Amino acid sequence: MLRLTHSPLMVGAVLALQQLPALFVLPLARPLAHSPHRRLLQAIQAVAALPPLLLFAATAAQVVTPAAVLIAALAQGVVQAAERPARQALVLETVGRDDLVSAIRSGSTVGNLAAVAGPAVAGMLMSVAGLPSCFLANAVSALAVIATTALIRDLPSLLGSGRDPGPLTALAPAARYVRRDPIAGSMLLVAATLALFGTNRLTVLPLFAEEVLRVGPSGFGFLVAAVGLGNLAAGLALPLVPDRSGRRQLWTGLAWLLLLAGFASSRSLPLSIALLFLVGVCHGDFFSGVGARLQAATPEPLRGAVVTLYAQVLIGVGPLGAVQAGALATLFGAPVAVAVGVGIAGLVVLAVWLLQPAAFTFELPD
Image (cartoon, one colour):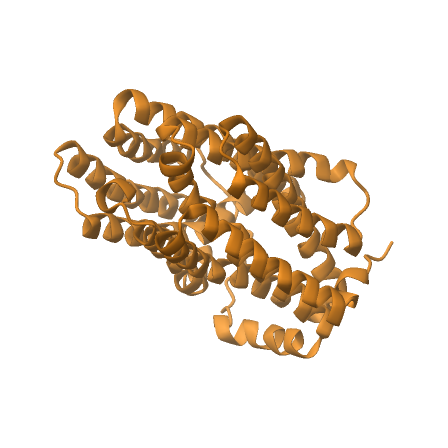
């Protein structure tokens, strides 16, 4: 999209359309968790291959348009949102309840590894074989999921067949609790603010790669991979670091913003990669801390609903963050867009620290 329109706002619009379906489709797709998961997942993956396959054909024939990219992004977002509950249910039935937590952690580690290797490989592939090859590789990758799930047979059904409450019914008590409880509400506000202004790397990094650092597709791949490597490092180090205090969360959030400010002013690729690696470390550590402390601060009957609300809030601010970052980058340039976001987020964090310090002093029970 950046090459087609030279518009950061359009880049943000693509990402927003890709993320937006998760906010609306994911809660409505919960009944898919009670469907035949293996065949459903295969069907969804087959559909998921269509948008990148069409983009491959359009880019190879040099007839791609901005509208086609936007439609493909929206279609991909809908498919990904529908796929998630079926995939999660298949994991449960494959490993069983006793090993579910370990399976989720392993899946998270594999996802972080993919976030490291994928952008770097895509950047090099784009440099060597051109942009169409990336879309083709994306489409072909769906075959791996289809083939893998074909090997999984005779799984027991571990999910109840009871009727799920609607998404609004399930989240309404959590929203009321968060609105009344200053600690949980403040935690959620800080997390949403940092997600809104601190996680827009896929909007701004193409601009830094093309216009600021001038390192092209391969440099863009390494910039994105650096954040993923930092997230992976934070996830692997988490069990080794017992301190999950609120003060640590405060300083981690502030360090995250300062590192982003340093990246915005950097004009060196090695320095930018190093700063983004540390940004990824702070990102992973901060949000894991918020999740743990939010659960500890919530009464047991509401804990699951509040965690679900937390996840939905983070999903919801994603499209907004992509659009605001693209709009600011269009008006003032990518470095200013990052700096403005850092300033706003920093003011919110400091305001919560001063007005509601319990959000950062509440400690996890032993």
